[in-house]
Length: 334
Figure (cartoon, rainbow, N blue to C red):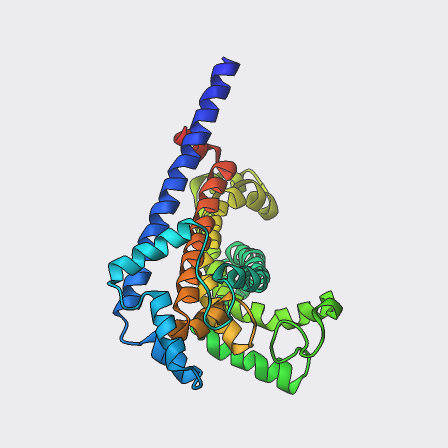
């Protein structure tokens, strides 16, 4: 029985991995088709945009670029040439940075990952904690005040709050630098961890501003539903204290919706990082995507595929955690 159970578990695990691999490949293929079609249908000519950005380009170099990128070929031929290159591990060469696209993505994603991880952690921990506080004090003064603050936060645009943070904490108070990931003019080897953190605070707060309020409000509603259920009313009748009720009955029931929202926010994080990085001149992947949209199509398409894979990984991680948090979901999957 033990051996058979182990083999069955191994087959289920292999099947689970295979299903998600197929889903991921299918999603990447669909994203590549849509993004390439949109770029091909765009009225903006990347070569002309490159010439405007670099007026000294010769006619010979322009013709060489057109031949290299296959702009004289039909879109379908260009697409399959691009896909074959990707399957060989070649995402192309960035026209802006004159380096391989994969190398640019690797370098820029490190900075973006630090920014998104800080914002993601702040959103999850503080949003979930404050949502629990609002739910436990439902209808009281603390709940009403915090709820109104969160509703106001949800209505404020990300770019606007970023500019306010710059004006207040950088220009007026001087607590944090105006932008960049490190102090300008300082060699990378001499930059301290404290300096990196000071440059990270304002972009991370800006990125987590909207998601933090949404997480808190979502957690509040779910916890109120749990606290108004029959089994919680029975627990109160038995004399259980609020902290015990939250620990025994509340957290387990609201954890799955919180995990769903937290890992499902990967797309919001990546989209918001484009705004935050441009406001604070933060050298991440979002800023590279903005600068490459007009003139650097290989880099733009590479970032598109990478962001698709990033969001898919977040959703897949959430589904895996479901089974760990809730055994009933794991048993249903079996």
